[in-house]
Amino acid sequence: MELSWPVIKEAFFAVGSAAGVVALFRPVLDKKHQRDVERAERILTILPEQLVVDLESSLYQSRLVPEWMFQPLDQLAHEVRTNQDHIRFSGPLKNALRRELVALLEAYKNLRELVQVPEWEPRSREESDGTSTYYWDFNKEAFQDESGIPQSYAQHLDKCVDHARSIARAYQRFQITAEMHLLEVPVSRWLLPRRYSAHGVAQI
View 1: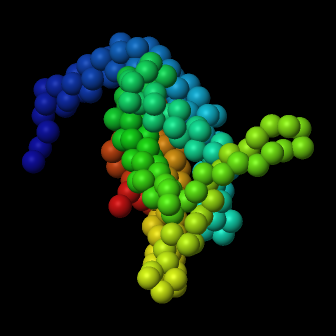
View 2: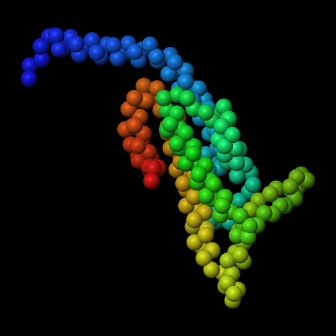
View 3: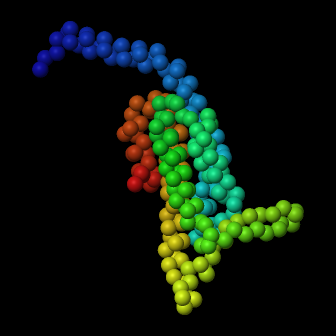
């Protein structure tokens, strides 16, 4: 198929028009994108990566969860529930950022449904400076059958760990999304899944 000059000229005109539209709206998109990046950074500051990483080992190995580990997640859940300005994304990546934040908090909700009395008992201890530290302590006795033999407590802990890992994966996907450059946004639909897979945090 031969391309005539009028067809080629029309194609260049279309590309030029599209580029002009992008250039026209780029300041607006850039401003919204930058604001979303700042909001994402605030969320990542409230919920530090090390806390998310340590949650799994605290649940399974220590079988003890300090209340301060849950506080940032509770705060974010409250902000989403009340639709506060801090978590209202409006830029070109708003859907991807919102999706991962919701996935993170859904995994936390599932975890908190397990970390409850009687399987986990709330306790406190007095610190040397006179303050009190609150935490959830795993109660193996809650799984005893009629003969006094613990049953299914390992499966319960495994479920807790699964939810903690889901929190971590959603957190890392949120990080990866927030790191995208504005110029990558048009291909984010294909680029993000590849980056998630490359870091071992692909959506299930």
